[in-house]
Length: 429
Image 1 (cartoon, rainbow, N blue to C red):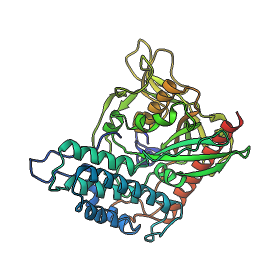
Image 2 (cartoon, rainbow, N blue to C red; image 1 turned 45 degrees about the vertical axis):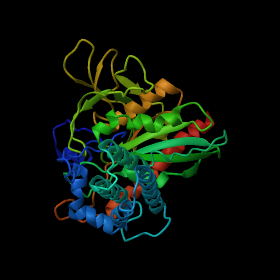
Image 3 (cartoon, rainbow, N blue to C red; image 1 turned 180 degrees about the vertical axis):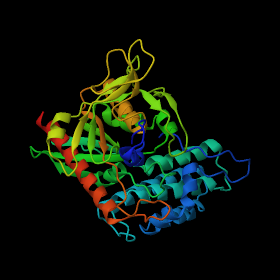
Image 4 (cartoon, rainbow, N blue to C red; image 1 turned 30 degrees about the horizontal axis):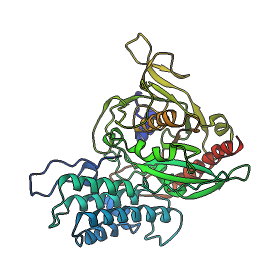
């Protein structure tokens, strides 16, 4: 999930498919009192043919209808909170189960697909936004319910790490599909990896087990500014019997390779998000969050990047990516630095760019530095997930094809292998 600033040539055409990647509920357009509120930008894409086909071919088309039917029977706000939380968690569990081969397939769409979760969630948020019960929840109550549905359906409140020194505890994060105005069929391999890995255990080189818990984040600037990353990760970074031993944020990056991003920058480059909103500013840190003062321009990975790069984890090469873009101390113009930032410089792009993939890496590692600096953690960019030859036109293309599925499965498998290498280093040291 990268913000591309270079002139588009042959490589640029490929890269544009990977142009970059919540505490609050998504903002809807303002409606007059008593009117049905307008759908969000993301919910508005639901009516297109591709999302409807994805939902139908995965069996996730039932979630919106069933959720609306249950909402109609709710008579109090406390009951609404219980119902929304239950249904959000159920959606997350169903998506994880489907990705991991449990339960009915629900259709002929590949089980590894992350898109049914994204589009089903939007159907549910739309129903909740349109809901008008007789007991009349306030606007703030409705926003709280929407936020609750977002959190529970992303696995953000269901991280369950085991206690004890016998196990390595790992948190991995992924993202929603993004850049959907260019191609609404898009999938995000980081989200697919999150579904495939949640609640799984891998065996490290020493034989010590490593438990992986995952979450998925939205591609929205506002949610990050409101603290969704910090709120989700902080309980697991704090000292305790179940504190995390390793974390990695994951997003989609360049074609044909994985990147272990060495440095993260405190800058938002402004590329539009899934809500078509743009933010160009220093990364804002929410009030009440443990952080480093003064706010640093750069944070660095503490993943064992040398071992990861050398491990031979799969079909794609893995690169120790060190480049950044900075304004040098005393300067005014951005300069690209292949070997990382120079002293006193101002960030304009981390190794992961200036979009939300860089930002999640910056936020997670800044929180690490404030709470538990010794935790190994950082950011991993996956290869771009592209459709197969002959299926590249979003106007006429199919929602899936064998090349598309094969590449997503390979990327997910290599994410698992990379996380296992990192976990093995933790277990060893």
